[in-house]
Image 1 (cartoon, rainbow, N blue to C red):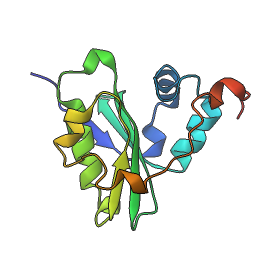
Image 2: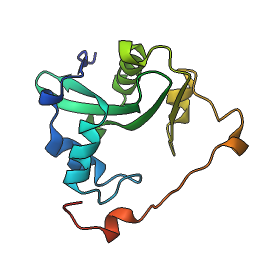
Image 3: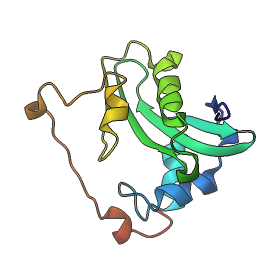
Image 4: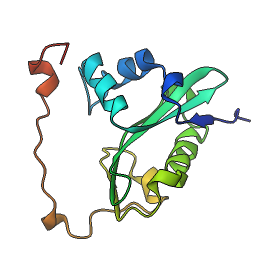
Length: 146
C-alpha cells in the first residue's frame, strides 16, 4: 500500500530545484529558466505533495481568487506514479477554500484527460469563444535569467 501524500500550500516547503528540474524537461515548459519558475511560483497558489520531507508532486493555480483559475504544472515524479497521488493532489487543489465559487477553472493537457474528467473537467462548451496567444519556443529564445 502507498504512503499517504501530505499536501501543503506553504511556499517555504517547496523544492524549487526539483520543480525547475522537472518542468524544464516537460513538453509544456521545456527549457524554462529557473527565474521564470520562481516568478510563476510567486504569483500562484502552489501545492506541494510530500512523502515525509521529500517533495514528489506539484501543482499551481493562477487565479484572481474570485472568478477564474488556471490549473498548471501538475506533476508527480515518475517513480511515484500509479499510487493515486495525482488524484489526491487535484482533489486537494479543488477543495482549497480560495478556489471555491470560481466561475471557470481551466487547464491544458496532452495526456491526462481521464484524470481531469474524473473531477468534472471537459472540453470547452464553446471552444469558438476561446483564443490564445502561444509562443511555444519562447524559452529557447530568451536568456536563462528571464
